[in-house]
Amino acid sequence: MTSSAPAISVIIVNYNSGPRLKRCLEYLRAQSFRDFETLVVDNASTDDSIAQAREGDFQLIEAGDNIGFAAANNLAAKSAKGALLVFLNPDAYAAPDWLEALMRATTTYPGVDAFGSTQVDHKDHDRIDGAGDVYHAFGLAYRGGFGSPVSALPPEGECFAPCAAASMVRREAFAALGGFYEPFFCYSEDVDLGFRLRLSGGRCVQLLSAVVYHEGSGVTGRRSDFTVYHGHRNRIWTWYLNMPLTLLIATAPFHLLLDLVLFAQSSSRGDGGAYIRGLRDGYGGLARLSAERRRRQQARKASTGEIAQALTWSPLKLMRRATDIRPVQGP
Image: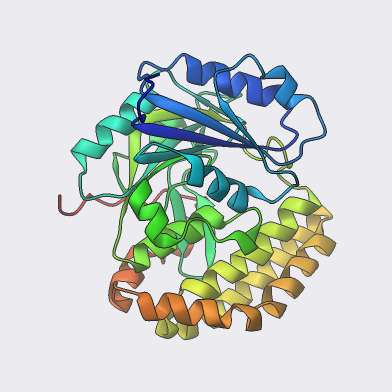
């Protein structure tokens, strides 16, 4: 690492990550690209995750409370010196050339502001954990290709949004968008940021060669009440805040139908209570978000048609959690 301003600032939000944080930092220290700094924001962890990682070369930012994933990333971004902001979960372990691949992409795609990584299942390296966030027109986001064999990875290209478990955004673009939307607290804030980038006319490229090995909800739990509640509340908010009015009206019946399908799934798994609370606070909070929705739509540069084209419409792709990578347009 250099004493002058680094090219990249890697931001990690820690909350009771246990040994994962130490392992994540060890993988960062093995990177072939060295011109980066590491900032760790600790959201008032009560375990020994920070103590385990103390010998690492990183700047520690004490949030003082559990302020959430969105606010913690924004806090670190204010202190970051790099022109490129890289967001990395403590349960994501980077391949040695990960930062090198991200850095190379900035010159390959000079007109692109956000980049996603190939996420491989850390327990089964033959399985995809995610290849770009897909946003379905019915109002549901998912990690493309989740659970599919790595041999099915699509070519490099544009995705709707990058998964913040391992993503990079140009600092100027992140600041112009206002960072992550803090009322989300945790979950969907990366899709929301990607949607806002789309509304502003920006794009995201999913990189094939930038690889991390990801646990996926390794800290919060894939089916915990916390995950279910925030995931579905924020799913509703993302759809409402960002969909242009014509698309919001057109997709509303399908969005409500999706609510019923997801309720049946949650009930069968035993987490229907958390799901209902998520729907209650999701729809119940829309009135408070109306001013934010107006602001976003008034600032929108992309046409309704361009947004519609960026969405995934196929119900089959949704059911299969298929990837949706498009050829890169323009420079």
